Image 1 (cartoon, chains in turn green, brown):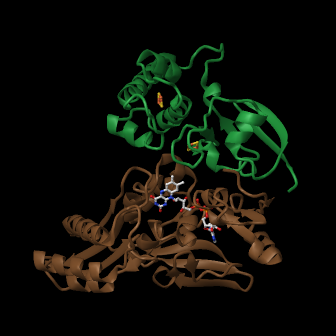
Image 2 (cartoon, rainbow over the protein chains, first blue to last red):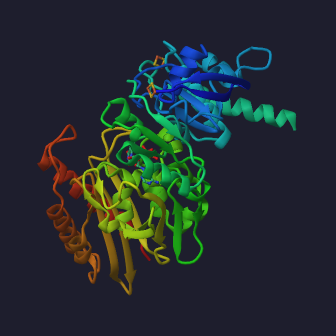
Image 3 (cartoon, rainbow over the protein chains, first blue to last red):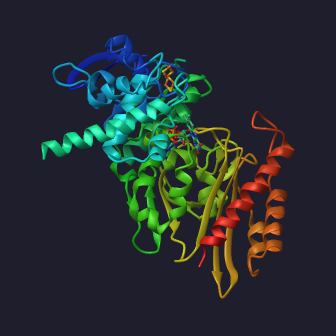
Length: 164
Length: 287
Ligand SMILES: Cc1cc2nc3c(=O)[nH]c(=O)nc-3n(C[C@H](O)[C@H](O)[C@H](O)COP(=O)(O)OP(=O)(O)OC[C@H]3O[C@@H](n4cnc5c(N)ncnc54)[C@H](O)[C@@H]3O)c2cc1C
Ligand code: FES
Ligand code: FES
């Protein structure tokens, strides 16, 4: 099968490449672009470790063809750092509240939390649990992940207030 | 988990999509959100030479709720169904059911059109659409036609849609004010298909049930619209005997198979439990 010309914006940078249409977005990111934040846990649409932001939607990059993402804007956990390269708010809160143990699920969790907090800046604990239901963690028991996301909401809201 | 190769097409109007389907016949398939199709392609259970992506076809999007009918474009995602306030107030049953489908990531991409066209008995929307008496608008090389959801499903993965037709829109009569509704689903975990699920609408007038509609999901090789179960409620005061008779009629109408979600007897039991809960909740909401 012939390769196609793929163009997209990944973490704010324009990228162009030749790829087979059947290439999964997760393989394109990890193997062609060497962006290895998004992980492959199951490769069968179940675990959420591969979660990236695609045009303002949280998606499992193992269940999107690169052809479908042609022209899109993609953000991975690497794109959520501050401009100076230091940890972004949600990343920092995961560190501070021990929202990770092995860290395998963390890039997906943080990328999902990023959009969840944009859509709902003041989530209840239940909203957080429902909102991350597509991301599995085999280590933490979720408690500290939920705390980290709640603390991120507070920190982001405080930042917003300070800026106003 | 790498699917076989294919040629990729991304037409911008229905006409162009239809001509690709006509040109390549059996070898071509449309893709909407891809969250049923891509897993099948990865397992190499679907062999597709030409994949026709519907994402850029604007006329397949949009939700309208004016007049007595909701019109929903096939490419409307489950996430959009949930977050559309106009739809949620017109037909709250759709939001209640959509929130029980899959997980957030799947709902951002999975579409109503893909869910109803897929033909998988595990999908939640076919039964939901039968309960609501939806009409499916199909567009093909010879123009458009409309098929009722209640006549669309023939067997697992076999529907009334011809290979060269695209599901364009779904038309749903908006239930009258005060109609009670419930979608009840038993699943093993978040993101799982139903062990049993049930959609119920109930109207009451002067203390008795004036109309009802009941559909059951993943309990046969098609969704089951259980007319006899609804008939057991109509005319009653929705007393316990009528509710039990409705449950018995629905359990009679289903035909589950034994699989990793449990043996037949268990599924019939769960079907009865979810339907009873759905009837109770719908009745409590009817006014
Ligand atoms: C982890 C996981 C959990 C899930 N859990 C559930 C669940 O609990 N309940 C549930 O109902 N679903 C569930 N799903 C399936 C999900 O809802 C799918 O998104 C949906 O079934 C198909 O919609 P789609 O837009 O992704 O369609 P696609 O996968 O793109 O297409 C499905 C089929 O429909 C055809 N098709 C699509 N659109 C059209 C159209 N407009 N006209 C004609 N044919 C069309 C395609 O050719 C294909 O054969 C789950 C999926 C995953 C990955
Ligand atoms: S790797 Fe994509 S969901 Fe598990
Ligand atoms: S921290 Fe190990 S899987 Fe989540």
